[in-house]
Length: 549
Image (cartoon, rainbow, N blue to C red; front, side, top):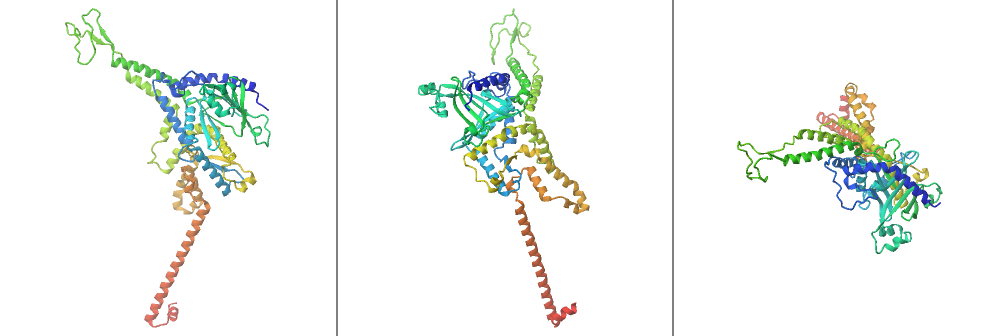
């Protein structure tokens, strides 16, 4: 059924009205925290204009950059594989399926971090959005012949709606395209007459468009075209109120990240929103301090109105004629500002500390402290504490943003025929997988298992000195694997159970062979000794052996 353009435009108006309060809040935050993004859809800002006029202190700007860098390092570190695909039951123990899913996981990282995809830079922009306005949006789509493309979108043109479960299932994106770009994206036969007419003379003239993605209400199951897809996709030329493209998606293409969500609200709230009072205050303090400092460095002068002091200049080495009266007292004095710089600096420092606390900068600094003098148990205990503190910041991103993104990536690669062929048992069982995150944040949250293992071993060590067999209670092979998970040891470093069994069997055979050789050597030495004794005594060896018996 064709999309109803009137209903889409009515819903767009309703979503825009619902978001209006957030827009003023976002504008107030961005101009103080991330000025380069203080440009909202429909604004008259020009490229390259100055946007730091209201910025007198850079604490919040620096804190946001550190927040984004820290979030990236604990959730999606570029230098390591931060998730795996794990088979669900009944295939959870199948080595063939595990190996196949691991190949897919590695392929995802190759595609994601290829130079063409631009994932790393776009992910960083998403974290900046989380820290500044509390909501980020990334568009994940296939790029035929090249792989997957990622675009972090400015929230100025993004409008959201939730389903009954509180998950984002509708996105309207309002954006602009030049005449040339519109023809490139939609084809010359689908654009308006005005675009076709003006593309030669005005190729860079821009028009407004809307991209609406929402759940399909009439899925025709079994079809492999857009009518069988669970998500509708509609592009609209806003000025003409005309649909220029209609299709669908197998997975939701917009990844929405929200830092925290207040009850009854659709959009997220951010550390910058919480810190906004402190950010405003410190900007005013610094603004006032600059004025006071300027007066202190170049103070105004006081002079009597009835003296003989004439015009004078303030410069090094100058002689001010008439500057002293007949008693030698100065006719000219500077006006003391009375500023208390230590007090204002203390006030600023308190505000800076509060801003850093809001952006978790203080937390990340504490967690990154030197561990060289810690024991293994202390390291894991600190990791466990770290996991508890990071859980609120990382859990929502894994469930709302990263999980749907990985499912979208797998779907795109599968339809492109880029995935390796699945094992037959996977096909027969119609297997399913789950996502297991292995980033620093996840390892920190699961460090408690490693702490428990080490504490148990340390606890029963004194008992084992009196009763060694008590150590038989512990399966040290499993304990070693639990500890390796807690420390984040790469999987390829560890041998699997079959390899370990083969090594131990070879070691046992080598030990048995050594025992046999030692026994043979002992027997040979005994025979030689017996022969020597028989030769010296003149008694045959057999008789001598009987006599010795």
